[in-house]
Image (cartoon, rainbow, N blue to C red; front, side, top):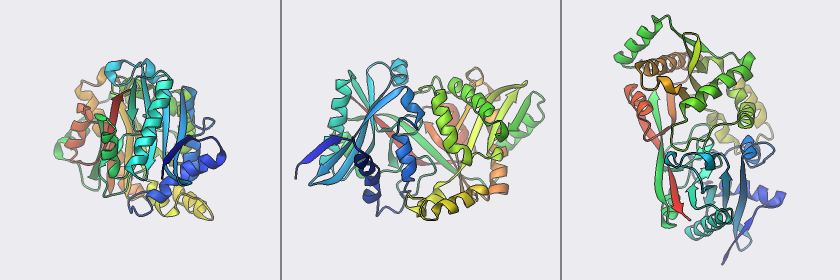
Length: 382
């Protein structure tokens, strides 16, 4: 039967767009069904601050009246202003939220996304990116044998071949690392931490959740400075921070987020989240009828095997110094202790980390962590 790709227009279309992965991954024991309400919020311009500087068109593919694929085509006005040597820049558009039942469907979806981008004047396509580079960028190409942690993607192995057959070439890899956090770090790290504790210029403090907005502003300022030279960087905006803050505030625990101060000035931060995918996995994407109660109970005092570090950064002026590594190791060690003692965690995951981020990759290696998942971004000239 022929494949029809059409735009998502109605509420029924959006429901079908959200529902498709639950069928495609039904037999994948490592897929974690996201809450359908969260996905609905992600694609809703009223609930996702990313849309304040971006636009998207969603598509579904049908064969014989059955939905067999989906994709988003989108552009980000801030990404268009970035330097081309940092990955994005003028003429770059994106596609993502990609799922397909077979290669023919994948080909039709990507072609439709590319046509939308051409119609918008774009000359280069990057994908998959779902939706923002700060959300779930890249395609999983290594690590299919275990479940992703909170806010990380999971994809069918066949997608890699289908995307590459459509003419896409790899442009960047994002790596995650895992480690046993019940073990002390190597002696060299312990010495670095001990030396930092004797330095009166350094203060590593917990965040104050009662001043959530103020602490978020401090972290945002450090983040946008620390990451500004990274490939694919697009500055986080206040509407995005506000929306992410609402979503993640229940996962914010003062023991798991640190801000480093040097001579009284905030210069580094580290955010750690308990892996909410652990309680979510058996819920099947719905909080009904009583899953909402189970989740609220878990959030009161979460016990999680895994802790994920999604973001950390040191201000740019310190990044080439020994101080940067010292602050990073101190924050990692303090959070490691509390994660084990207060949350019962035994495993940590760091990432994603860009494959060319030498500083972070060196830190991950020094604390005896191992690569456990690799995500890949692709590009093609339109």
